[in-house]
Image (cartoon, rainbow, N blue to C red; front, side, top):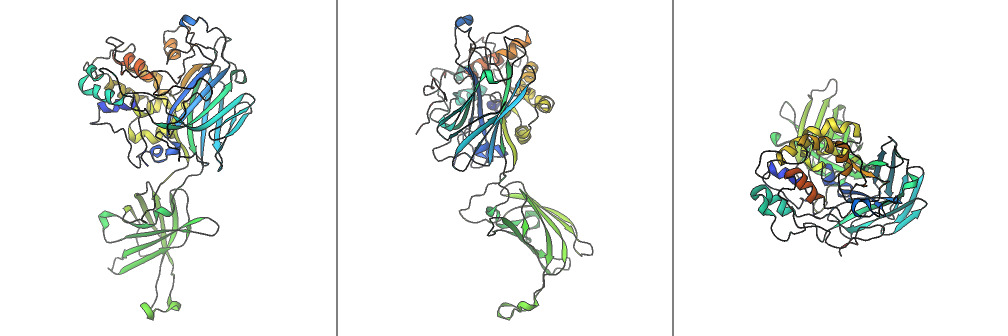
Length: 500
């Protein structure tokens, strides 16, 4: 099934160093998250409820009651998509008094979600329904994708500049759905902030596959090294009555004397995406009807072999010879030669698969680093590990308007400092909700603020962000897409119902 992938805005920065942008993903992506659609995170939203948008704070003096955090995933989802009992979704919080907390959401085989954590909060609900227990309420299900953006106009801007935005824009995500997890936390249940007037929370989310679907039956087939065409391996995954799958392999080739060589492994236990097994040389007498079963001999172990698959179509075979064996050690990169017809192959690995904080930051990371970025669960390491790549992308972005100078309010280096800490910031003590990055920019001056910031569902993050970074609003650039394609709900879970 093809999934619509619109890694908008920051993802599109890559067009400035690449020839084209592909909006629709291939059947299997190149990163772990792209291959694991149910763990592939799209966007994170954080806002207070109720909130207001009055000017200068008028009417916004009362503290909000609840923090709403919404996570979207599996962009392009349909009614047939289900949450997996093998994936846990983590929500991480750290406030301005350095208090850390988290809430974890998981699903059972009946599609009932349970979320728990943060001071003993816990609530459950079947998919499509809302569950409430004390200071926590939860929802999971298929919803309209609340992101709105004209990707074609932004892509064209790289070639023709401001004229890429004439007239009415086209919402590239109109009519698409996502799977969503929404949690509501009473603010009184959260740890207090550093002052009576502020409680700034840094929030990010991650997906973790707790039971990786490694080597499976779909890996059955022939594998070989194209540089050594004429020899190779037959792999077979067999199932036992216990439900456990085991690995068998057969080597066909030649020894140093030019004689045919057939080696076989015993049934071996699979460990994720790799398996190690003893390798035996066999012998027997007779052919066809003349074969003598009593003459068959498994022989001594000639060495051990390790298969490690990096995808459904490629892997590495490492052979280590046993003492006294006439065979020699070798390592070979193998690719698939044949498979089982109609059997789809997916290699899913355990551990943290993906993470998301601020919109679109991860897409500014080069693809070869994207797996490392998505699996990194330690915010203290993010700045050193990823700031250089974020800065390089921003510097390429600076030339998109035809002017090599950086014309934004702040330098690319300052933006890179901010984005390297890929966590949404929201002040849960403030009800006014009119901006994005309000807290980060206020802290640069520094000055006080009267805005919750975070990321509301109706924030036009593209327009404000784009102008701040490219033109400082002179001239003003807009894609003329200012709202979601369907009205958002005014009550929990706030995301609009899905398109049918």
